[in-house]
Length: 252
Image 1 (tube, rainbow, N blue to C red):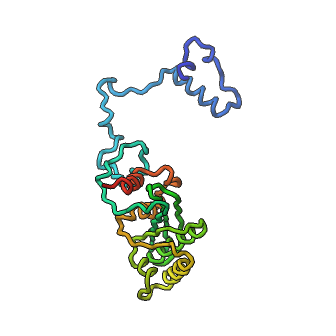
Image 2: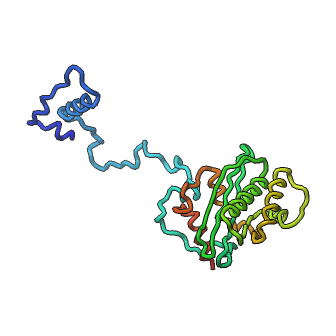
Image 3: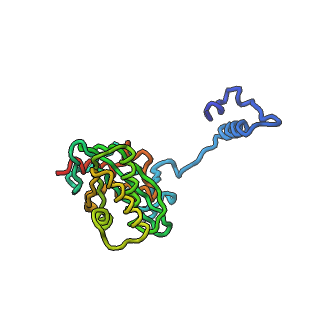
């Protein structure tokens, strides 16, 4: 455009600013005037310009290392994935026709906010449903109990009869399966509600699994609490989450 404005024999060079020019028109004419003056920058003699040695280019010490979690959220989903055998998993597929629901929660003691997550998968390892919530509570146990209660209520509303719930909190699962030592009142109230639901749903089973068998729900909960979990994580999971899902299904 500047070349067009600066044509030596063009009638555009005769255009005038006028008494009330617009901002855009003023800038166009200013650019024309600069071109007519043959304005340009000179960089040394125009040869051997080592831009990477210029002072404006930050040095390596000026860069901050990006955590792998953040990196995977920003990178394209098309990036090649590491082999599944590099990971270990204790998650197991449910029997055919039964849904397995993994639950977890991530709790911030400073704010009292917890991110609750449930992930339901079928015998093929495919996500059947998933939910994530924010919840105000006082303890990590209460957060995980609230997650499990929400998952149970969801299963009831959807009419599931045979379903497996898994959590990596052994105190929570033990408290549901049998009487346990006294717990904080909030957690105890939530556990009692879960027990009450089990009376009318004998097909609901509750299992304790180690963290290695609950890493999908664990990752989503932690990422949700920190605001790093994409809204459509189940349909287009970031690389790190997709790796976890594939690892569970294709483990050695």
